[in-house]
Length: 480
Ligand code: ARG
Image (tube, rainbow, N blue to C red; front, side):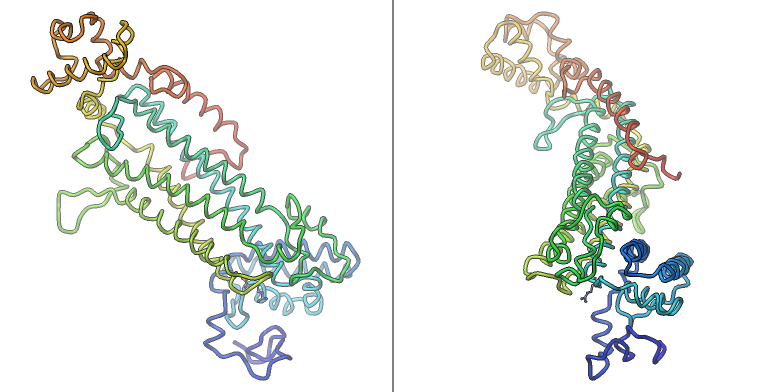
């Protein structure tokens, strides 16, 4: 770090006209954020370009200065992208690093950039700009995972598996129907993301430190340049609240909660006790001691990482709750949880979207498991109701049939007709269509039901919806 170079560098005696001694090294390290907030650099440059253009537009900044600032910021953008930018801890954060470099490159014009602006409205603007782009990436990643699930559902519209309640075999369902349940969850997640985006997409710049500025700024001009949908209309609120980030992390925590449920099911289904699915070897690992093991590490990590994001949500809520208006340095602590949330969600969605098409189903094992536990007992009762029995009497007759089957060690469909008629005289030979697992799922043929026909209808509906998505949100083939 050079000794006298900065007008912004308090350690080096620059902007520190107000201070009698340089800041202590430890305090410098403790307060600096450039180690992580440099991730906002391109958003910072974009926002500075819009601010400078506005200053020129309203006549505060001469045209030549604007041209110099634009040239300087373009150079800096290039340096950052090529990894050549010399980040300095002594310059505290991304904003001061870029501003100082701009002054080095273009002189006085660079010193005029900060007119009518504070780092407080600057950082709020940068985070919103950056987050807006990441929300779009999360939306695309959600669509890609939905796409993978829909195609697996199409392949398994008629594959029967046990449906569970209390993790006990309850009634047969189709695997396609089960997968489409997650497509619905991820759709609500996507809606939440898009809804949060509307509130992220408001412009704080112009609030300056907290009270606005004496310069005749044009905030609408800046908002239009940056593609914001509106202005943050109260300067105190604009620089201080991070609810937009909290809202995003809350939506992300729900994404991860849904991911975690799916991951947990994959882990269970892969266990030899279930034996329903196999994952491609590239998503599993071995054990260092047990040669026979193939572990579902990717779903386990996806499940485990949901904890990080829920933790970040609590961290941000706690960060905000005690802060008096307006800006407080506490808010610098919003970035690492936010960045890690974005990274975790994007990586996890990508891992699942790549893994789902590779899931290999053992349809025979699923069917056998579906036949266990007398999963069609409800169908038998419904059949008797159709023959005129009150539901409670039907329930009782079927309970006796189940007991008989337990004694014989067979499934319901294997009981002789005569025995069934002894328990309920209304039974006809057609009862066996209702006692098979295939008959059971086929009979649940209404909107939201598990029948293969309904699954195929839903698959078509999802294919259309996913294909119609704006390019930004359209699923991309992974690896593209
Ligand atoms: N690095 C700071 C942050 O992340 C930027 C704003 C600093 N403002 C201030 N008055 N110290 O919040």
